[in-house]
Length: 202
Image 1 (cartoon, helix red, strand yellow):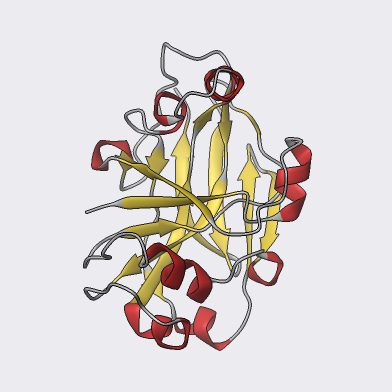
Image 2: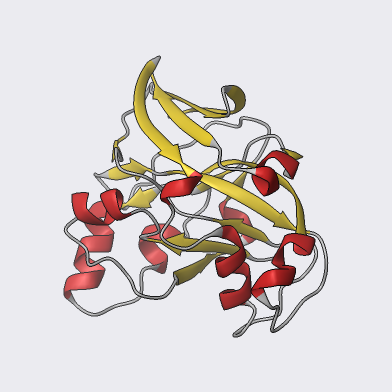
């Protein structure tokens, strides 16, 4: 099982971090040890002093596929949820400055909390809104219509380079509003006003 994360898929988020808006999907991987399920708490890692939350719509691949045409991509997922891509921003910036890979900043244990899965039919039938509440206050607000690359474009693009397998997860990018987390924070992810994810920071 792979965890595939799409970077800079919302222009407002790329701009808030002073990153260029990509012309093709940018993706990276996390290991399965990054997953946090069942609203388990997140422990801030010792190697960072500046961990940021990034709320993302997540889809689960439901069939084997390679070189998938965009027009058939809708057949390759049937469930979705909300997830968090925790990022050690200070470590990431140092990696970028030195031309190094990002894994130490993105792929550490517990860096990918995952919510409860629901049917993806509403997503296939139209755009959806989602939001992150931080300690009860709205922190991130997203709309799938604002994605630079659509779900189907993402699936098609990734499958050109690696085979998608049943159970693979695709984190589809975060909107603006990322911020540093502190011990005691409560993060709640909602999709179409339905709470799918809750995570306490320790």
